[in-house]
Image 1 (cartoon, rainbow, N blue to C red):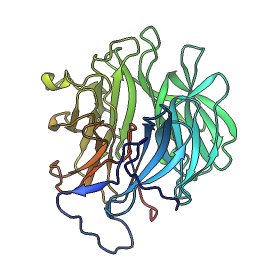
Image 2 (cartoon, rainbow, N blue to C red):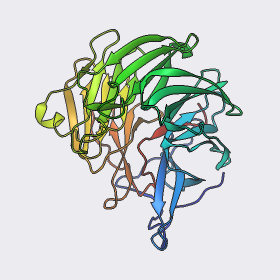
Image 3 (cartoon, rainbow, N blue to C red):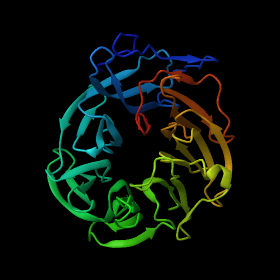
Image 4 (tube, one colour):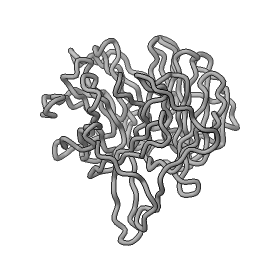
Length: 375
């Protein structure tokens, strides 16, 4: 693999990552316990102002393993794994024309692709379970942010067709029911536009199965997590046209139940300013983890009743993901001082684990992706 260590340089101002606190025991196993953590990064050359964009990969099971950087031509947002080839992922730009396929073992971009001239990618995609199709959230920019799901051949990325998202500004998308149904967040676009929603669309018939509208028009539906039982957690930003310091929020629904945005405890919910960015559901405990960068908050909630379980003051928390062993939440945070960093929380106790602080990581993007070549 082509690896590039992060070292202190005049243009990047980064250094080799190091773990602090207790040493992490490294055991020889056939399969990683924590796995790789992948995220995107952008960094500015202090000498000439140019920017570089990378996909960053960190092996949490080997603290001496160098941080891998794979150069890209845009700042990536969502990362989507190919279910039939564990080395391949597709990466999408948010509100832009950039998208590419990356071979993690080669350490290189293997293919780039773009939407039609009047469209932009909106950040996320999903492969069909058989790995033959790649679905991408896109928006028609001159038509009131009309949303659609573009369908591409997963091997060639050739455009094959599209179907509506049944909303405006679609962002996140997940396939459920063995790939038969797509769940889509529709941000809604500007305040004068269509209300934000989560839609369930039959992939084969392209018909709308269900549409969940939020109990407030002031949010921009963002990212979602879905449990195996069909429970839903959605995190949102403030609606376009509202000040950045207006709250976004966290919305939950048990399968078939009420779709409701959390309002208690009021003093903490009021601090969910701007965008509540990333969300992750731990199936075994029913815990929902979420990050709110502008509020400097990492929060954990009970999926069944919406009660707040724990919160942490954390500078600029962004990505949250489960480790490969499904026993830990991995969280990215920091900006400048401290630098971009990772820390880990026990999924059962929600206590921060000592000895797993890693900085800098190079990951400045919105999301983390947990990965294993053995899966």
